Image (cartoon, rainbow, N blue to C red; front, side):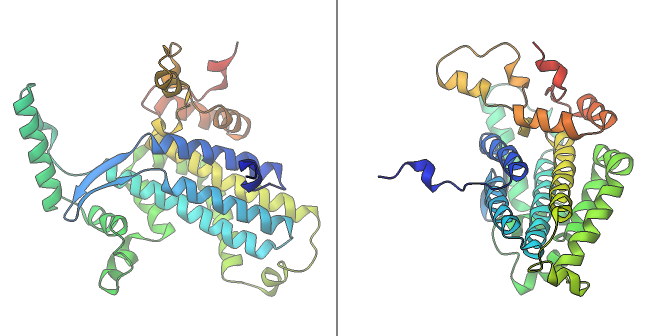
Length: 305
């Protein structure tokens, strides 16, 4: 039997491979940090599916990049950006589900029978959908794989587009709004225009870039676009749900029957710490650290010997 490593994709670009490792880490952490809710078709969850798909997309981008198929690579970068923004939209919606209110939950006592009744009531409200927003109901159609039906075209039109994901996140999360307004708006607009130009072939050069030999300037621009999209995603995820960045050290120790190292539940995956500290504006990184909400350690100084 061939060595399993022989089946793995061999990257040509070290920069793309480094970003692949970020999403490989996020795939692991999102599979162990599952979001669960209930709808009329039963329970559903959001796990690491998007991150695994992103890893495959990065492999294909690397292949196109290596073959100088820049138009194809940029088209896949558009998919990369869109899938990541969709993940943030779905995550934000599912985490803000409308079941029992805090005031209603406080009426139950802390004993098994009362807690069971509270859970049953919460689930019944979620299943009924009576308190759910239009965004929640549209998101569930995506989860249940019925969004593509013609009868759901209004949900697609209202919510399922990258510009709509961005608008929804900015409008429903003050931390996201602050980060966009102060750190990301120019980066977003610049890359959004470039991706649209390639996807819609807004000029013959965007077609010719797929076969005409390019100099190293094109290499640098494509990598910069990939990194800018990654910057945007990591910035927003860090204030939407910083737990998704957790390193595996804490859980690995528990699974091996060992005592986890003190504070390791707050460690961020090392490659993400290195990437964010190397690339992010220091004020942005400090804002993230001050506002991530779960005690996760994004600053490199936390890991200094």
